[in-house]
Image (cartoon, rainbow, N blue to C red; front, side):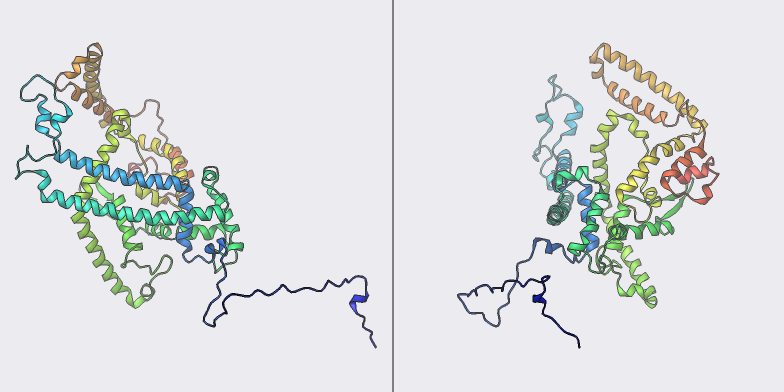
Length: 474
């Protein structure tokens, strides 16, 4: 029969001291049955089980790319101020400047020079009560629309400010990263920290471990849909123009409308940030949804048509305020090339972040520019050389005369001739090939392919053809 011994009789076991229960605490008021005891939450509990991980990871990525809260606030505030400046300055140019007096150059035939106060007058006395610009209905409508748009941007600024304030708290409390550290921290290091935070914080409920692919797919869920549409040829729209052939239409305005159509608003196919509406999963509802999408696109076109004068005026004013000084300082900017919006989506890979795409396209920019410069029309080059010679003759003569005596610049139309001839020279040089250039389109196309990773199969071995160059220029 087996014998059993008490463990306390063996030296391997030592009995603990008898535990003493803490003295009971008493409340001044008795506990009522309808009361609820709430425990204080930890500071990290606010980051557990995040409802919208797609939007959360996107804001974490944007916060890192824009270098912290202070840079985000400063950039957004200056954009709001810049918008007010453009609207107010343009309005002042329309209603406060006496252009008739300004272009005369003299006040009432007098020899005294005009001052700024002589030509700037915001009152209605010089117009008359009937022709006053400030009392026109169209200006009031434009200012009301501009103010409404600015208020919308202001509300959006405060909403995003509250979001990025929470993201800053997440960086400091969860990731232990301050704003001053973001400049020396790559996104891949931040991504590793996010993956490590899954175990203690449980950011995602569905998975026990997060991977880099999970984060990429959630950040780029919507952009992957657009990339798929470009790869399948559904976007962008293409149409044929007489004497120009097939043209591809893809602008920032169209991109904004596509985002508004597919991802925002009650007409969007998405029920929330990551889930399609149930009707879009049923085959029998396809025709009804197609008709609904057509009607929504029609209304989008009507609204864009009504707002097109304002959008066009804004684009013209913004371009003048931005590029005129640049062209005066660097006339070669007129002939500079850049990647089109269509090219950015065509060459974009699935699950590729914005900074990764920018790095690839920046590396491919130089061989792509050299490839485009190899195709120069001999006829245009001959004409451009002769036109540039004539323009350079005018420019050099008036430039040397102005160096000898600066009063030459005050002669009527001399400054205009200098400016126009300089612009003509720059434009002509865009049609003149570099004398040291070598015609090696296949080598340049292979250099581009090393960075963009994909090109149409029909281009293989045909880089020297003009039609390949036309398609590449889109």
